[in-house]
Structure formats: C-alpha cells, structure tokens
Figure 1 (cartoon, rainbow, N blue to C red):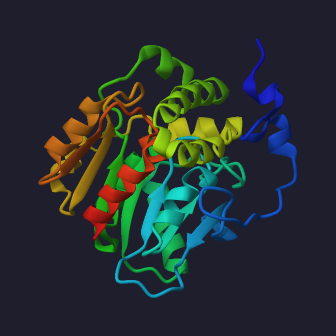
Figure 2 (tube, rainbow, N blue to C red):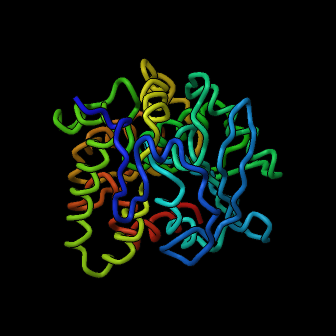
Length: 301
C-alpha cells in the first residue's frame, strides 16, 4: 500500500505535498492581496519548544474591537483563512499554523487542547494582546471552546464554526470519517465536495476558489498529532459554564460535522446563538464568505 507520506506530489493550487513538502526548504514568505497570497505580517515564533508560523493582520492599528484569535481546521494552513482575515479589515486578526501544518515545523512531542491553549495564550501575550474574540473552525472549534473555558479572562466573545463537543459528537458520514485517517484522501474528498458547492454559488465563486485552492496538505506527523490531540477530549460537561456570548455557525449539509452537533452546542451553552447556512457543507466560511462576514460582523460588533 502506498502511504501519503511516501508520495511527492504537486497539486495545482495546493503546492507540494508528501515527502518533498516535508523535506523542502521553506518557501519565501509571501505578501499579496485579499483572496490570494498573504498580506499579513508573518514570523516564526518559538513557543513552548515549538516553532510556529504566525500570521498577524492589523495588530498595530487602532481599533474599537478586540482582535480575533483563530484556530484552524485539522491540517489546514494559514492561507486557507487569509481571505477571511483580510476581509475583517476593521479589527486585528492572529492565527498560526499548528505544528506540522503549513510552514510550522513538525511537533516533537504530542500536545492536547490544554497545552495548546497555554501556547496560544503565550503567543497573544507576546504581541501585547490582553483580550481577544476567539474563533475556531472544525478541529479548531474544539480548541476555541477549550481556550475560552481555560482562559476565560482573556476572551470577550466566542465563534464556533462547523464544530462539535469532541468525543461526544454526533458522527458524520462514515465514509468521510474513515478517510480522515489519511490526510491526502480526506483533503481530496472534502475539497471536491466543497469546490462543487462553490461552483453552485456563482456570486462568491472566485472568493471560494481562492480560499479552497490555498489549502495544502500537512505532514503525516503533524496530521497524526492533530488527530491524537482530541482523543478522549470533550467539552460537553463544561459547556453550561461557558459565560461568554457564543455564536455557533453550521452548514446544513455538512457530511463531516452534522448540523445536530451545532444544535447540541447551542443547547448546552447558555444563550448561545445558532446560525445555519442553507445547503452548505463543511467549509462554508470559504464557500459562503459574504454571509459569513455579515454574521461575524453582526455578532462581534
């Protein structure tokens, strides 16, 4: 059987994946415009024994709003969410590639939501941030929940997109979940489904293609450690103690994290607000950017 880690592939719009990606030198840091390459400030930060690639938008500019701390989905890189960060031009935005994804180096030791929340806190404090609005998508939504519970004093509002309470989630499509064990199969299948969704959404097709086309596969080590980080983890017993305003955003036709998970989160979190994207799948932040931005601005203020 050919393993993903044994492949050297150049996927159009994705970049180099497989062994060659793990061994290649880091590409030159990029800058660009909305919907394309990064226009953020990029740096490599050593935090808690890890070297992480960090992207920062507008942290040095005055704003009436606290910045957004964003946790990405499993295996996803900074570039995938760059259009969202660019579009939220009225506020700061900070995110980082998880170990072994994007251009962050592979993790040496395993991590979990508890330890990674401390890492994220150290990171925002390094850039002088006392309070943030925390947001997470899919796997990152679990991180956002944990960060908001563990470091409540540093959080104003919480946005949970296409996510679940972890181990106690309502499972999605069995075939899709089985493919999640292999990053190449999982990303291929998810991208194909979401790309077709984007093509049906003519007004937003270009933005969706830019976001989805910028997703690159993680290293096999980074992907495995992300999978293992949430093994046995659930937020369910702690959710009634979430004392922040929470927005839950879900895709109506999400095959990976079904809508029922968002309904469960909204039921367990006091006064949480649930918004459903009609006909959307797992990557609605990318396939439905205009509606996503409208809801985010309305909720975050």
